[in-house]
Each structure stands twice: as structure tokens, then as C-alpha cells.
Image 1 (cartoon, rainbow over the protein chains, first blue to last red):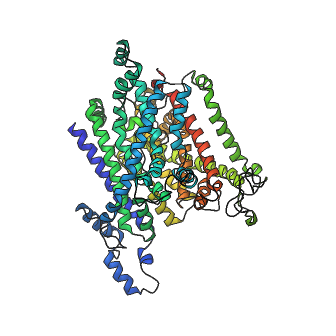
Image 2 (cartoon, chains in turn green, blue; image 1 turned 180 degrees about the vertical axis):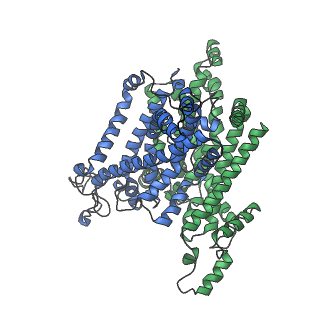
Image 3 (spheres, rainbow over the protein chains, first blue to last red; image 1 turned 30 degrees about the vertical axis):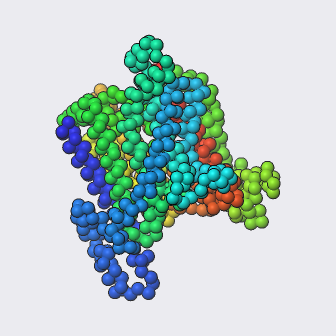
Length: 312
Length: 319
């Protein structure tokens, strides 16, 4: 187990390092921030002075080494635009994205799990097909269009909910539905296939033989075990929602990280964009690592198979 | 399971409990699709409920192919005198402008028809490109192993960890929005799915007798991969591709909406929805109909893809 653990952690670190490199190069491809930050009257001396302050006077490789060195100490650099620490700027907006992501996640689970159970129990019936369609709908439309349609119906026509902005629970409803529907299908599939597996298990047969009522067998005995695989992936689904929030935030003018991306891009604010890329990437890599380790811990065959493959 | 940042996988494959040969994170994306079992087609045919999505798909392809002959008028011709005409059945609608017009007086119906062609070609091109790149790299990783494997798979991990919408926005700033941008982003995101699948299958195939025999006969690595391994994994790669079509269409629309995809005035469905965003309170039809087109096509693709996967996965058929 220790060997497997170490090799997976090492892999994650390498992936994360590659990510910082790509984030660094990508942002620098977008052009010279001096062109955006300074106006046309700036002289060559002004440009040189600002470049030096921002650390842009050195060649790329040197800039990257300095960036990595600071990163190792937890310093992501300062925003070119505001001169505030870039990490702090992102973390200031992150709670909004977190709030939207959490609400969407709860909704997604609240809809996805029951549909998964029902479609498994009523396999190959109209109910099954209907449930699948409802779940798949979320993946079959672009979130921005769903957002617009919800605004059209609930804000413009009915006037029940605000069309955008933030500040109250009512503001959260439409963005959360928009974002959350996206992952319903994934959760439904996981629950459905896990339920199909457990419904054939012997303890379920026993529970039925004991004369337990069918709902109790399904919702208590079978579901409890069927929830293990979806639970393992809950973290990954959550990270997906956080990342996907960028689009939803744009539609509903939600003040999260998504808006910050657009703002920062306008000023070629490299440090801020790099923080966001690395932050989401780290979340994703971390969650994947957690899932792998969790599985290896639960199922010894995995870590042994991996070790065997390496030895061969 | 590999969930992709920013956009969930179109079809997160079923959980495989007790899948020994594959590590858990791979077991899920990679579960090898077995060749169509005998009787699978008959079962598919019995599912009458699939007839509707199947016919929608056929219609989509037909409309895409014959768009210039089917569209009532030009997708880009502006007619400011007719701007924001409501759909024909509403008051103020014009009979030859069935679904109304947008803010430049362009016929929405014609734009949707031409948009089908754009969606069809974009998704086909993106899938072929990512399939080619991913399969090649995945086979190399699986066949040669060791450092080749390590390098390719770490890059695959990294590309999945990049926030796809931010990448798209960055690339749009670098090169300007356009089809190239869309293709780059989609390939960046999708190649690793093919690479993982190809790698896993090569790993299990390369110890089989026919491969070992070919090696013993002195076949080069390239020859063995092209002649002996590729034909055996092609089937599952095609199935994987059908599951990506809907995803690519939605992604292309989203990128266009963010201003990082196909630029106006091209009749991309995503651009059309974005066009109507500010008009949602006054001229709802501008955004609604192109979005409905996306929904119908992608839902159909997903339903059919789901059914195919169910049929190919015997574990789900057991009950």
C-alpha cells in the first residue's frame, strides 16, 4: 500500500507541475500586458520601468523559475492590475462560486439519486425511459441556454425570481438549477447501475424473503449499499460543478470566480489567471488522487494489480 | 471515472465493481466495449422508444448535408425591415419567416438549418482529430510502456486538469475566435479519452498469442500496432466516438456563447442563442429556437448512445 500511495502522490505532483508550466506559457501567449496596462503616451523608459516592477523584463524561462520558487513558498505573485496578492483576490471571489456550486450539488443529488433508484427498479419500462430523459436533459442543453430559458419563464414571464445578481436565497435558485441539472445524469447513471448490481444481491433476496415491504427493501437495504460508488465520486462531481460555474456565473451576473476570469483576461493579469488555473487544477488532481487512494484502500486487488504491472 | 473540468462527460460509464485488471480511475472511463453481442441489434430494435431519437438523428444528418437546398432563405442575408419578426403563428408574424427573425432581420429557420451543417461538420472534425491523436498516443503508451507511457499519461492527466473554458478564452485572445479555436479546445479535452481506452486495450492485447506471434516473426512495433492491434480496438473506439458527439455540440455552442468559439455572423447555434441573450424579455424566439435545436439533437444522441452502452454492458442486462 505504501508503495502504491507514494507512486500515486508522485504522479499527482508531476501533473500539478506540468499544469503550472502550461498555465504559465498559456497566459504569456496572450500578449504583452504592458500594451493593455499602459496607454499610448508611455515612453520606452516607462515601459521598461513597469516591466521591471512586474518582473516582465526577464526572459520567460527566468520568469518561470522565479514563479516556481515563489510558488513553493505559497506566493502566487501580485496582480498586475491591482498590485494585490493574486491568491487573495481569487479567494475573495471563491466563496461565491463555492456557494453556487454547493447549492447546485445538493440539487443535483436530490434529483439524481431518486431518479437513479426508480429507473433501476422499473428497468425497461416507460418510467425508466422518462427518468432517463429528465436526467439526460441537463446534459443535452448548453447551460447558458437553460439559464436563459429559466430567466424567460420564471423572471420575465412569471416574475417569481430575479433574473440575475446576488444577495438573497431567491437569487441563488435559478443559477443553482441551471448548473445542477448538468450533473444529474451522471449521478443518475452511477446510482442506477449500482442499484442494478445490488438489487440482484443475496441480502436483497433475503430481505424480500423475510417479507419486508418492497419500498423498504429498495430504499433502505439496496440503496444504502448502492450509494457507495456514487459517494466516492461525489468529490469529482463537485469539482466539475465549481469549474462549470464559470458559464452560469456569466449568464446570471453572479460575482464568482468566473467573472474574475473575464475581468483579468481583459488586463492580461497573468498572476490572477494562473492562480485560477492552478487552483481548479489542484482541486481536480487532489480529488482524483483521493478517489484512487480510497479505492485502493477499499479494494486490495487494485494496489496489487498496479504493483504487479510495474514489476513486470 | 474521469470527470472533466468544466463539462461533465457525456456518458459517465457505469461503475465496475470487481474489475480487477483496470485501476479504478481507468476502469470507469476505459471499460472496454465488447463487440456487439449476437442479438444486440434485435434487442435494440425491440426498444420502440428509441425510434424517435433515432429519426431525429437521421433528420439532423440529412438537414446538415442538404442544408443549402432545405433552407428557405440565406442564413446571413439581413433584412432590417423585417427585424425581430415574431414566429409565423404569432401576431405580426410573416408566413415565409416561420420561426421569426433576429435583430438583423435574418431568418432564424434558415440559420438553424445551416447551423445543423456547422454542428455536424465541427463535431465530426473534432472527433476524428481527437480520435486519431488519442488513439495513436494511447497505443504508443500501451505498447511501449515505461517512460513513453509515463510521459503520455501524465500529459493526459494535465490536459484534463486544465479549466477548459479558461483555456478557450485564452486561446481566443491569442488567435481570435474561430473554428480552429473550437477544434483545438475539443481535441485538447477529448484526446485523452481515446488515449486511455486505446492504452488499456493494448495492454490486454499485447500479451495475446497473435501479437506475441507477430513479434516473434520479427514484425516491427509500428506494423504490429497498425495491422494487428488497431483492427481489434477500432470497434470500441467507434462506440466511444458516438458518445462524444452530443458533448462536442454542446461544448461548441458554449464556446461560441463565451465569444471563444465560432464567431458571428456564422449560423452557429451557440452564436444564435448568444445573439438573443439581451432580447430575452422582448424577442424570446431569437434564443429559444436554436437552443431547442441543440436540445433535440443532443438529447437524441445521448439517448441512443446510452442505449448502445446498456446493450454492450452485460452487467446492466442481468436483471
